[in-house]
Length: 288
Image (cartoon, rainbow, N blue to C red; front, side):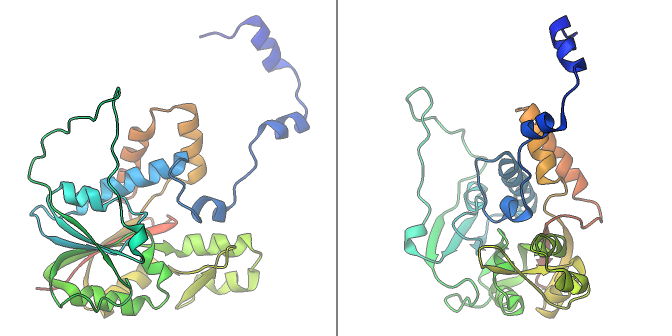
């Protein structure tokens, strides 16, 4: 479509830098992007769509018992239940137990499509996700530690040892942690230049957030080493997302139907060996 003469005149008219700056949205900091998982923002819609697709690829084909340590914000447990798995979700408080929501279409409850296999069960248990003393040894076919939960457990070694203990031989775990890329961005944002100079070579990188929280950040090599020390065998490690938040928001802002294409692009990009994402996703198996 060709621009009209009036719009062409507006395009050709000189614009001051002040006018251009006034039209641009204020830049968002790294912490503003990743401190809260705002499901209404374009980036987090994209992020959870990618996470759901990655989980669907990872879930065992045969139904089994899965432990979910990812917290109440994690959206993957219902997907695992729909795939036929019995899921035990560990929650910090009974008040945070997930509640089933009812969506209405034209004022009526939608009729769900028949599942390919009978759905599993979802059970909520209140407990500490660091020490899994409530569970016996070797009782789960899978353990999901998504939503950066192991980065919030600063002694990650203890958490991984517990995950390895409750897995049955041949069982697998899927986990997501903060990467050193994110940690260095947060340190730079807070002008922590002395700490930043040693960040890439640190054995343990603990990063403060503006809200006072502290998370542990990892390189792919550090994550693989911790899994091995816990008695697990690394299957793969990759970035959760490669596309930046600003890129996703720009594309989805101009095309509301771009989400599917972005997710497909992301899944292909994340299969590379380039660990540039702010979060790392890893899968490991307990030797038989």
